[in-house]
Image (tube, rainbow, N blue to C red; front, side, top):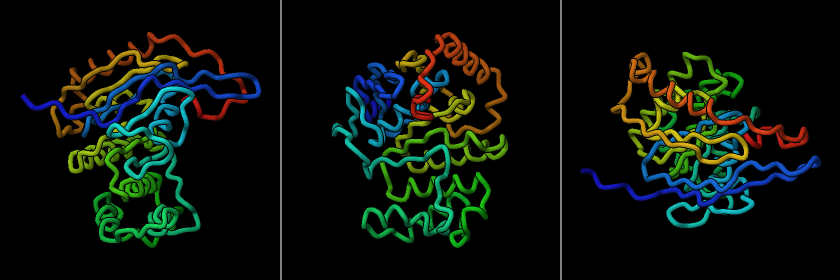
Length: 270
């Protein structure tokens, strides 16, 4: 029997309220979750359940109203170099080349980038030779590949991914899912992944955590036992459909979230 991996990331009774002109929005309520070292987990749930709020709290970009996030036992307060983030949009600066975009976080932190590491990562994600291109010259999928390189450039131990492939076409999305699994198998980073696609969550994850409608709570956890590496063919099997449908039924069972005030921050409770 393999030894149980140590806990890498702890979310301890996370609660979050947003103050708006129309009143308080209760985004998260007493959420607790342990993520093991090297584990790949996904968060799914009804729209507005607080998935993005929870992920941004893990990154240190959002403060919690109460509760705590700990990385290797140390509370997370503010951005942490051991936590990389891939956003819904690539967020590349349009006036800088891809290479200069990848170097930008190092400029902000006052650190020198490792050109060999950046080059190796670009080659790994299929962007070799594209460093001199401007973002507008790349497809959406290629821009997201650049954002993955940017997140990995500091060699973080944890990678947070906020529905990074939602805007891509189905074929490109499949390619990116295969790429992410390959990178995870090679690096064994701890990954927390948000998606609205249940098949995507099942294909990529060791565990899928279902959140309730706002205020977000942990409703149920599903362990995904399909062997790795996983090929896309698995998504056409009866066993895969059964797992997807079971998780879908659990999400549909969750009550709908109350309507948020119109002035609530856009996307704050996704």
